[in-house]
Image (cartoon, rainbow, N blue to C red; front, side):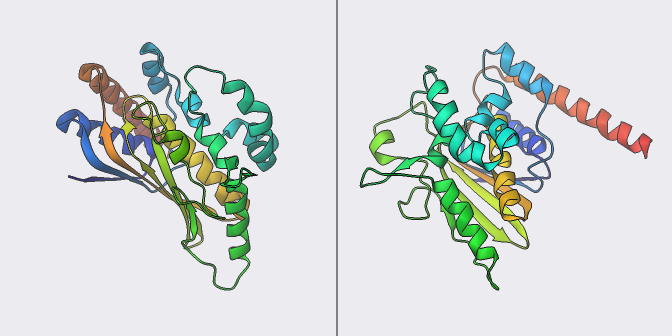
Length: 260
């Protein structure tokens, strides 16, 4: 069983996926292919829905993937150094951060000889070095399960092997240089489309945009593959949210057409 959803924006991709899950229930291998990941998706109605169900807002979820606040304030130094040294020690005390954050794993990883490396820094530097060559390699920027000098494993067998629930669910990131842009593919072993996906997409888009900016290229497509996708709890409340979101988007399109 597999389902591919293609969309221009994060919001449209998530709404189409939610419609599908409401109709067919949990499925295996749901893939979102988003053409313009930095557009659409941040919506007050979604945050209100999340707050009403005692969940974190989209921005908070996004920050667990990429520290966008630190990037805006301090640039790449804020992500690579300030976040793991100053920010993460405070937030890891929260009871919901039992295993850590993806953002921390991106910038601090302990090697087999008990040393720490900064995988995101290494990956960006590798991509920058490739761009300066006449024929840059397109597909050697893996940030996933394999250990190695330029790899960034998000799943740690030693720390996560015994876990069955509660994260981490994002296990692999793969960046590509293609046609003058930085593209990103993300793999989730299990994915909560009710509470997590809107914020996950925002965080991934911010990470992708950061890498693209740092290597001097445009932001390309974002592909998210969920090997298991689900949408639990009240279907009626979710359907109402989707209906309201679509009405809002339609009004925006109408107003834009009138203005032009």
